[in-house]
Image 1 (cartoon, rainbow, N blue to C red):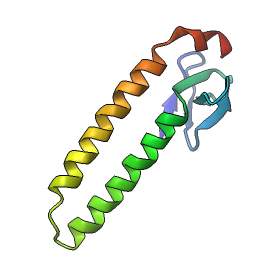
Image 2 (image 1 turned 180 degrees about the vertical axis):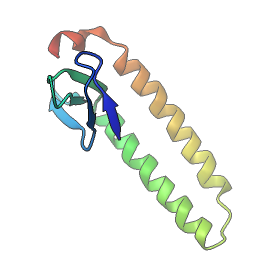
Image 3 (image 1 turned 120 degrees about the vertical axis):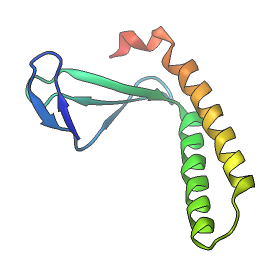
Length: 104
């Protein structure tokens, strides 16, 4: 994905996100401008959020496999939506906390 830095206005290819441990189980996901090194935070996660992310990916895989076999996925789709909503709430709760701002 092509990205344009807000500071130096240079464009660069975003190939990989980086992770950094902040405090305890808290991790920051970010990328940096390849020209001026400005850091852009993508999100902050904790162990519970990372487990939810894994469950979401597993549920998506189950749905894809069953769909290819022609099996109805109503139960799995509802469960996936429930997991996504829970993930969204947890991400909002964690990422709206300003106490991690000082650790960037």
